[in-house]
Length: 496
Image (cartoon, rainbow, N blue to C red):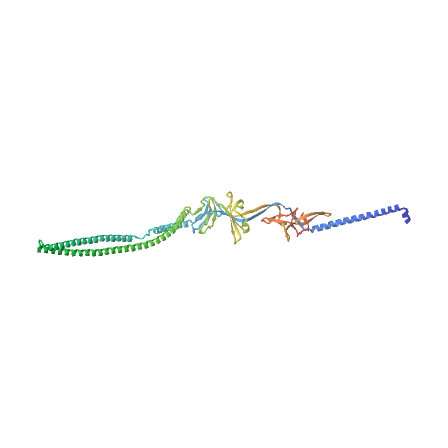
């Protein structure tokens, strides 16, 4: 055998090669079969594993606008209303209109009891007659009587005149008496001189008759002088008495005048207080009479209309609180919007939203099929309730609106961003906000999807909480929902 191998080395090597070749073909077939079986098992295992992966929905971040807005139930009413006067207490027989209704001139609003209106009218007219009589009494003069002062003044004037006349008369009597005294003194002096001359004459010597005559003349002169002196004293005494009496008359008259003036002043003060009281009472009564006169005018017009209350012009009926079968209440229970009155929209928002509102901000108001813009006029914040009352004015061109409930929506801001995505895509952990992007990987077994953590910064979330604007390096879609929990690095599959 060995020899043969040696003799035929080439043949031996060929035989080995042939045997090896035949053995390799068998091994290859077995290897191929094994590999095919492994592929089938791998695919089966892969299919079973894929079915167990979380199923996710993806969204692609895009450029968008984040809107901040608010909505609320609003109340529309006229900015200015005027009351239609109704007689309080008169029974309402029928009501034909309701608040918020647009009326045409002459449209019936309600019907009042005619008999009660007539009774009220008669009563109001009787009241007016009483008021007029009372006003006449209060308007009468309350000035005090000044006749006593006038009389006292006249008495004083007469006393002063009498004093003057007494002064003049008694002074003249004294002067006359003094003049007579001077004359009597002169006459006495002359008589004394004559007697002295006679008694001293020697040639011829006076006769006894002459001396007796001279002595008699001197005695008469002295007697006259004595009488003149007494007359002067009497005149002066009489003057003093007369002047004292006249002075007392003047003083009495002055005292009477002072008393009269004091009494008149007191009467004036009392009259002034009475006049003020009467004036105040008269003014109050005049105001009552004016109201009563207005009531008479109203009742007269209603009686003439048979108790029917109608719209005086085309207008919105803003308030109507009367009820059929009930008496008209006190106050402005029936109101119409004034001509050219603005239509106001009022609604309440939480304080944090109300604080964002500025004057002039546009509000979209919707009522039924009507929609229009209104401009914010005022925002009144209630700190206790933490709310804000917003009042807006409908545009003048707005049509189809009436007093009542409406819907108001206003936009605080609209901001454009490069990356916007659903809020459901946002996630949070100890490191901050992030999204899960999906990375595709191709391998021998096909395409696999892996969730990757991508950090983001949230810039703004819309008021509805649906979309958010973010910053971050995001490429492709991000997971917005899944049928089970997904964490970074997890394999996922997309919904078919």
